[in-house]
Image (cartoon, rainbow, N blue to C red; front, side):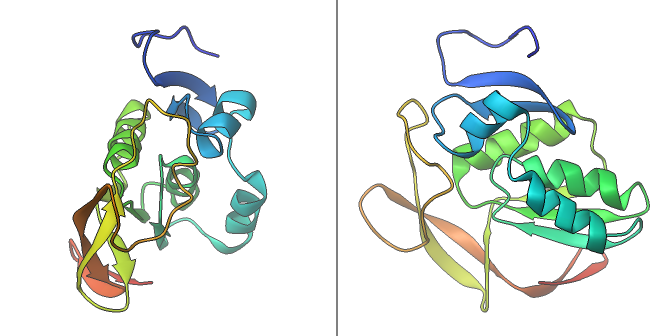
Length: 165
């Protein structure tokens, strides 16, 4: 655990994690809790990525949350590869961007968007980060506490790199 340089009375904590430094929400009962306790989230998925993803590849992390997998993927594809990370939820997206910056990741683009079969918009819950919750455990749709967000079609060209999801 790193000395916490963040305010101690709020919801974010810096963690020395398996693939770098991560800012994790202390109220997240799944991803945040795993990062705080183990320095990783779902390492078996990352192990599968290691078997498939090669240096120089262009990959997508759809539903990137705070970027635990994005960080591992960016390191796996190396400087000649690229990662597109999509996260529709505002607070998780902010942490995703912070985590890429904290680790000096220059081969990833983070987009605050969902990915689907068509372009359009959908509703994303705007969860209070100061209240205990599974921040990655919700679907898109309308409902109380939702905010409208962008949705991108699964096959597009991003910044000159073709991505098919």
